[in-house]
Length: 280
Length: 262
Ligand SMILES: [Fe+2]
Image (cartoon, rainbow over all chains, first blue to last red; front, side):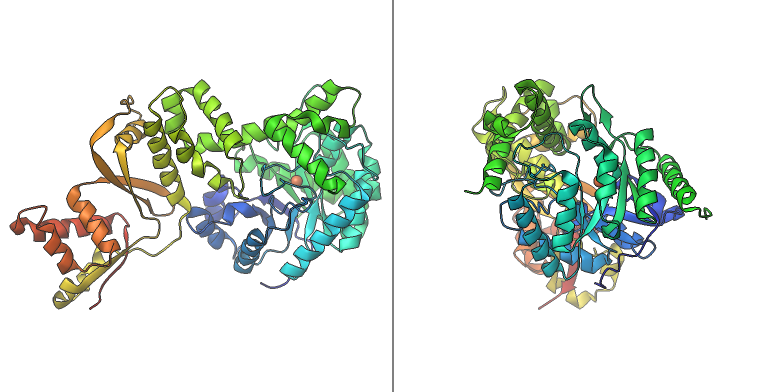
């Protein structure tokens, strides 16, 4: 593959199977698509066929959930090889995964599990990201996850930990604005403390999403519209980080394409207003 | 052992067994709070994997009923935690698991139903290959026909069943009243394959068809197959029958190779 240049891509959406035909037939004015890496790590069939049809027309980025960068298990090289060969096939603009672990002793819980923010976890994660980047031959983006518990042993705040991970491993950050909001609510911190701490030049992508609000905590479900406080946080993030490629994640309760497109236009309008740009 | 490894071990142990060793590592005003928060993960884990089984085994779900199906899912998730990054593989061992379980129905029948549904699901993402069409047959010189050899689309799988699971699934797909799962008088061979990009299909084979499929898999040529078919039908019907079968295979995207090779 050609090496990523991490250039600004504009406003994107998740490429969902529900949208394959609409995307091919009407080529909507979406700047780029994010694909769920694991959906395409298959021998054949519909997903790869559509991906090959769509990739000539849109910049793509690969977003994975199985790197398990924080697990004490060794890196899953078989998985990484498959990721690399998919990257060779579609030339993504970058590859991202999460600051989490997904299982231990070879098990996979298929969830993004939280890490204790300790010095030990920091050096472990940094070492692993370096191994991944050496293997792939380029830098990856690491995303902050939503979490529901804090560990007593943590020595850093999440924003300090994420910053140290990015700086020490020289990776980039995918900043999920909704996840900051969700974790802020769940752990009673001010999301602006988070945003104001993250180094500007490390952030190459934003995620926006909806969630499920319960009485005393929020669950990150990606099945609702984006709520106002997250839009406000997004506005603050654009003020701090400037023009950053932005996409909306929607994994459940999928609305018609036009509704998601409208939500994306809202993101675009907010960014344009902050940056005083004309909306194309 | 490192502290990170201990934390992860205890955390995972909570997801798998609700073991509370992890509680002492989590911040919170009281145990209720800690448990509520940990349960977001633990319940999410069960819900997620149950959903995957629900998607892959709709007919088994209908057969067992919602309550027993959920009970079965929890037992399976406990016995076979996922070890693959891809959720597609998660249900792989359900058939094996059901062989010595009891969920209110004949366990061997349930195991076969699970094998059937998983095979059907697994052809959907099998490797691709261009398939031959009827028109390709017209290009073959008459003299070459005897030496024709065949290869199937890579998604093709042939399985045998002792219960009427194929009819059972067909009824389910046709949204007809489900028949009961019953042991067959004779074993049934069924082929599974992907037609086009995503349509999973299956077909119950007659003895003669089974012979044809096995012969193709054994790399036999058309003349050898026709010769063998005379065991199953009157010799004067062999030519017409074998042609019909070949046309059926071509029309159903089953063949990826059909050329003369001596
Ligand atoms: Fe995200």
